[in-house]
Every structure is written in structure tokens, then in C-alpha cells.
Length: 237
Image (tube, one colour):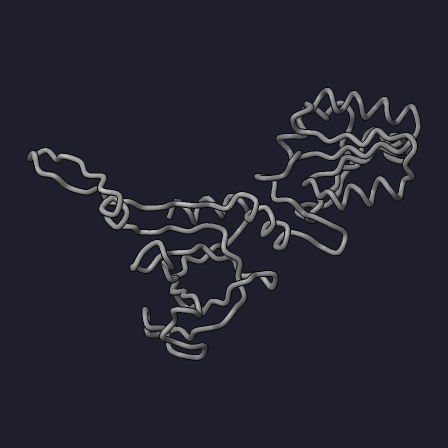
């Protein structure tokens, strides 16, 4: 349950998947798989409950009735592993002769388990699941910055961008203050990098008394935020 919650907060829907323990254990291990066409694994999952199994150890096939709930039908999908749990039992504590003395004074061997999350792999899967034809669309929980300030290349607009950057904080903002990049380059790079919220400073927005606030994911309709309200922007979007 904790693993599922972690992946949910990362913007991923992971399935608890029965898998072979390989050389680590004779027991079934559990992998956390995210359905994606970029995945290297094949899984069979129920469309009515949370049953899921890797094809390599499966005794069922796509189209079969789910062996767990008896109602759903198994579907096939490609998936990428983002974490795993191995129940090692006493295999390695016995193999390396690493005993302990229990409260009754008896010699015993500890039960071991491995709990892994592939951090770099998770980042790759997030990129596969959260992107469009323009670039990345980071979930806010893992975005490098919440805001990407795009100031059109002239002195006044970059000066305004600097003030906004200071107000919102360097930990929350990526500021494109380049004066040698075209408007098109700045917008294209902002979409490519994929921070959740873009703050656009242009002649048109300043004439309207503020900046344009744009959701990279389309979570909300773009709007004009007055310069006086910038400090509260973090709580509004």
C-alpha cells in the first residue's frame, strides 16, 4: 500500500505484479509495473480487480477469467518496472551463517527482505507517461521547478521577470532571462522542459497590468495575474 501511494504521488499508476524471484528467492516476488508502450515487460492484468502477473511465470493467458476474483478478464500489456519487493526468508542469513540469539536464548536466523525503487528508472517512466509532442509535462510533485518565467527579450520585460523571480523564490522558479533567444525559442524551450506553470511576460500582458499564467498540462485556463498579486500565485495554481 505504501509503494502504491508513493507512485501515485509521483504521478504513476503502478500495478503490484507477481514475478519470479530469479536467483534471489524461491518464492514469488512482487514488481511494481506501470503500463507503457516503452516498457520491456509483458504483464497480464485483470480488468475487474488488482490481479496482475508477469508473463514469464504466468499459468494463465490473456482472455482467461481472472483466477483471483473470478469475474474479470485478463488483458495483456507492455509495462515498465519501477520498484520491487523480494521475500528472501532465511536463504542468505543461513548461507552466510549470520545467526542471532532470540529472547529464549535459542540460535536463529533473521528473515530478510529487499525493498527497491529505481529512482532513475522512475524518472524515465514519468517522462514516458507525462509528455506531449512538445516535450515533458512534469507532475508538480516531481517537477524541477513549479514556475517557468518566460520574459520576452527586452530590458523592461527581463527586469519585471527578475522581480517576479525574487518574489516567488529561486527554489520555485526557472527564469529564462536570455536576451539573445527569440520569442519562439523561449516558448519552445518552456514546453520542452515542462514545468507545470508558465509565467509569460510580454508587451501585451504588461498593457493588461500583469503577466499571463499558463498551465503546461491544461489543468486550468490561462489567465492574467496582476503584478500586485504575484506573491499569492503559489496558492492560486
